[in-house]
Length: 438
Ligand code: XLS
Ligand code: NI
Ligand code: NI
Image (cartoon, rainbow, N blue to C red):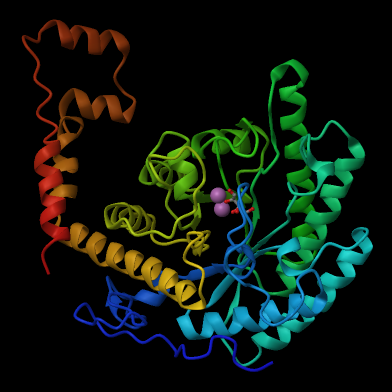
């Protein structure tokens, strides 16, 4: 197969003054920030489904982008053309990871066995392509939401036969992930939720999801998989109510079912905002629970109530994201662009512009988050805000020595109490100052 993205070179770093649309302005892979290269802070990944699959089809119209890559969609020849295109794309844009669902790699066969044989063939082909490159799999997953059999759920289905079909897919997707050296394995609960409680046994459905996850962990460890499993929370879409609503809900579920040692969170920006949180909120909830594993990097639109999966361009959000990631000491996973071009951005060049935008946005976020930490004013403020717990009664509360009676007796001796200003506007102006100075 010859070159697919003709006239597009390997994307260079040219710096903030460059006006070359096919160059990075901020992402400089080898630049060292807080002791680590940018490329190590930011293990970027390409989502097979969006970048190589999404043509812009929506419920009102056909695709606008041609992703046939010279082959007939729905054939194994096309599956291989996508591999060729994907590897050329990743090399040119300079990213080292990809993420996939089983059905992104090959067209589904007439039964599980045929799909599995196709997956063996395509993963051999991918392994061949990986040789001599440093490109690897970030994570794999099984699509347990597209096929009609999953209409009532996968692990949460009312039907044990469907549960077994889901198990077969998870088993094969884990095999493929291990074969491709994947760092992680994701469960996004596409249809694991409900439309109405009138027909739903919620407790039973949740227990069954946990059973499927335990089986996956047992099987994965038995074939030598050492990476993390991830839950990717999302509050709604496609189901009206999804069980993995947000990070707090998913962490509670993992702990209730004894899965918290093997699982972490894969936090998607647009899912966090759909849950009524900020992206930073769900990252912070994951971090403080030791559960921040990986990130699906995209952004939503506050005017739209669904998962628009836009390429990230909001530098404030990216900065606050990187602030959490730096405080967590990095990710075990990476930054998967679970993002797609807008429907009218339908050329090959647009695919590159989108990744340049996303990678530059996170590079800027990293640079600025490191500055916020090095500047120290914000951290110092937060530290001092809680200073009353360093001495006296506060210290006794934290160490567990104080009783309710002691606190009450202490309170009786107090006059007016002033907890101190939260200084939000001052802190926001410090952030602006850091964002908009060199
Ligand atoms: C959908 C999810 C999905 C997962 C992988 O909203 O983001 O793309 O990342 O199944
Ligand atoms: Ni996602
Ligand atoms: Ni999503």
